[in-house]
Image (tube, rainbow, N blue to C red; front, side, top):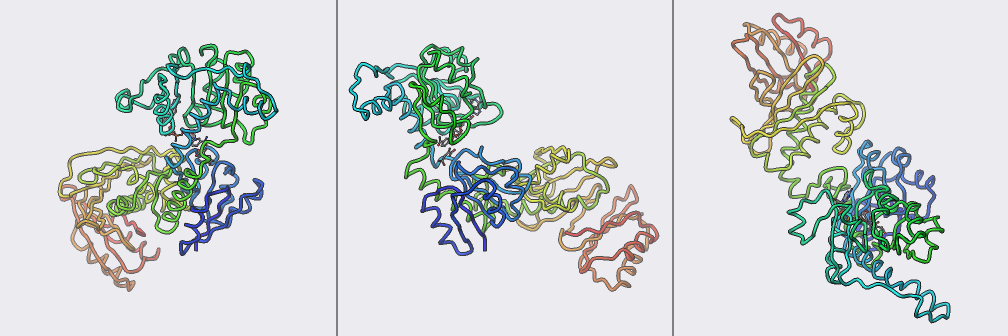
Length: 527
Ligand SMILES: NC(=O)C1=CN([C@@H]2O[C@H](COP(=O)(O)OP(=O)(O)OC[C@H]3O[C@@H](n4cnc5c(N)ncnc54)[C@H](O)[C@@H]3O)[C@@H](O)[C@H]2O)C=CC1
Ligand SMILES: O=C(O)CCC(=O)C(=O)O
């Protein structure tokens, strides 16, 4: 039974999916202190949050069973994703589920802002009729500068064009061609600051964007500009915004998000020219139902079938793609696991070359699977698809991928070269038929090894009698040989034999083998 904790309010449609799925048990506990949440989480396999629960490193580290954190929404800045990745926890979100709703909220905020609708409403509710106090500004033919033209920015641009606004967008990650297709005019930040009457922010919050709209940015803006933030608090410096609002440089600000939530910055929100909502961007029935259903389905599929969709720390693999890639993922993992057991010192560099039909896939998950296989025999800790790249990076292992069109005898091949302090070694793997992994090369030797069970790999001088002597050692120990593959490189007068045995060999027999005439080295592998 997999247990899921929903720690923020979530639409019932999503909770019902958990409740009605055999094999899943769900608890909804939305009132808790951070300490209480830390205690609670430890008993669960899955955790669902929106933006209220802050999933810190401390919470993640104490979550013994947790394998997945689902964000019913887009932004994952309330989750310590690096800490989750290190612990092998998948973090998934529901991109797109609340995009239109949040874009509409930004437009609603912009329209309310320059027409002072919240202030006029408050005045009327206080029994006043202050017609001349609430003079507003028109939108038609004004310039809207959008910072971050992703999903929500695009919705805002589209709706603003309907208002006959000129839309400019800044986004360093969108090519001019892509922007042209979207009908978006790209501009530099300075161009936006210099010409926009309204500026709406729609980037994620990260190292680059935190504080990007600060005093220096306000200084470049037109006097009387209106600012809208329905993305994340802190992208705009609240202190610098306050000063710009008080000085009149900024005519008004519409804020849905704050540096700290719930905000304690009452000085800022008390300003007459600030309108605000308590992080309501995604709060419509439609969006909440959509994201709740989406995250519940994604998490159920992960917890019960291992299917990963919309993970922010692992490439998405749909069930169909997973099915098609499964044999290659198994091959990559087996190859890594095999190679890790024939080296004798720390890995410095991993070179992975993909060739043949395998190239029709995005090879990123294959590299992750290979790293998982490679690190598993070396480390005590639990290595999985999520933490394998993090562990490799932490251990200073340089991972390089390359692609080649040369496949030789195989439809697809993965060639793995490992550089350690002592040697550079190469193995290669391919599929036999369409699904069965095989090791087809070990350094200079062409082989055909089934990477399963207990393997014994021996290098020897290519002299008569070696196989017979080894066979006698194994037979005397009453160990049954299931398979045997022999290969040699004639010009080097070296040979290699890989046995598959029904049971592992103990140290004493291994020692006897190493002492057998003409044997150079012996490796026992557990696949
Ligand atoms: N107020 C609310 O309730 C909600 C807020 N959000 C927030 O809205 C923001 C946008 O969300 P989406 O559109 O779904 O994300 P998205 O990932 O689709 O778009 C973000 C865009 O920002 C761009 N970007 C990244 N760094 C940038 C930089 N330094 N300068 C300019 N552009 C940059 C990216 O290239 C991308 O095009 C996020 O911060 C998200 O957390 C999302 C949903 C609801
Ligand atoms: O769940 C919410 O209400 C906030 C949504 C949000 O900020 C997001 O999806 O990034």
